[in-house]
Image (tube, rainbow, N blue to C red):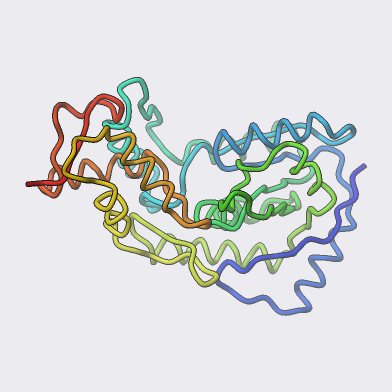
Length: 287
């Protein structure tokens, strides 16, 4: 049986009354036999699995939602799948996006909870745009479910506030800090996801304690600043841009590859050949 202890709670855009927070902390004394650990992305899942493997007596059931919630539409799973397929098209000819419905993994989560009868869900996040959105989305998708939802939040490391940058031994240290969310917290987070879905378009950012909408070309300057008059491999330009993202808003090579294509189409940069993979073509500033 597992003891759930207090941990800090970061705001997702809505304030909670102190009494509600105290109730959530009190719930942390509950004990669970078979929790399901839930992460965003395969890298985070691998880190959590490795941490669980060195933690005797703790359920090692892990499920991941393989997505990047910092960009792309939320109003429809089919539209989101089409958006992501377009992003993958010029990233690498070895990879593609094969889901027809980007929200299908959320249905698989419900099916797994029903099948395996997990008695709690532990959500692992850092304080960043994708994982803060993930926490809110989980509360939306699991609204009305009987399973308690516990939140395990990890601090930043190497200038990145993400679960995937933590070593297994470091994640193991947070196992005594899971905190069960109160019913009010779950409702507030679910409501915040509804706000995010309605108020944000194709690109979002974690800023001043909430997820906000930003223009799709918001990060284009990072790519343009990395370009020069010399031909440079596209993958290198993308790597430079990724390195200049801030700790809470790390954009992926997938996103920057799509933005490179937009800049090429707009004539702001030039490419030296077909763009089937970021490792096979070079770019430079437009003349």
